Each structure stands twice: as C-alpha cells, then as structure tokens.
Length: 178
Image (cartoon, rainbow, N blue to C red; front, side, top):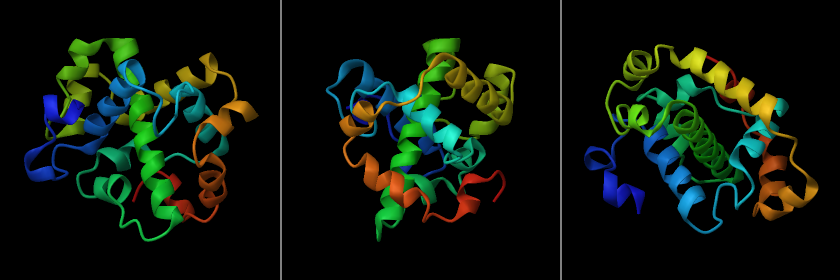
C-alpha cells in the first residue's frame, strides 16, 4: 500500500534507492498493519540488535549504493541465502527508517524518501554522513533494546532457518566496502 500511495521509483529501478522505499513500507506495516515479515510484531529494533550483536548486518553504505542495492533487496532467490539476504535488507531498512523517523521526524525523512543521490541527501538533511548515522542507529538500538527472547524468535516465521543460513552467506556481505 505504501508503494502505491507514495511511489516506487521510475520503472521499478534502483536509482532512487530501495532503502527508503522498502524501509518506509516496513515502518508503515509495523505501525498500521498486521504482524508480517520481516519481524512479525516483534519490535524491529530488537531483531536488529540481535543481528548487529551477532555481526550479521549489511552496512548501510551497501544498501544505499545504486550499483549494489539490487543485490540485497532483489537477489535472484535461487537458494535460502538469497532469501535471507533479502530478509536482512528489509529488516535493516525498516529499522533504520524507523530510527530516522523516531529521532528526526517524518518531515526530515520525506526529504530523502524515494530520491536519487541518497547519500548526498542524507548528509544534507541529517548533517551526518551515512556511516555516522549508521553508528548512531546501531548505538541507539544496542542501548535501548534488550536481546531477543526464544519466544520472540519463534514469533518470526522462518527465523531459525534464516539464522542457520546466515553462516553460509559470504562474510564480505557484512563488511564495509564492496
């Protein structure tokens, strides 16, 4: 519904960045929808805290890069690892967008939503580069959210399958740089 109402880039391409588009969709689903993927009513920042503490998150610089964003949000879906990468991307985008809206407001987020040159716009509007905002976001969720419980993991459909496939993903996926 969010994509229909607010846009989804030109011709479904990546030049406007999937990060804000999918992240805002997850934000809206969590705020107004029924429990659904990627976090199924478990606080999204708690899931992100788990991933961050485990070392399994994709640096935001990769998720905003128009050259690589499709690899994360639109993988080929040929194996479980591809599904896991997509799940991670949506979860991270949802958590990051939620953080931006909670900390800086919806008005500021609207200035970067579905726009080209995401990194430049982020720096202009938030007065921090993507790496600084990422550090603040991860620090915020680490300080303010507790670890996932077993009951919460069970609520997230397919969580244990995702968790086991994380170790099969190329470790360079989780490192800064390309």
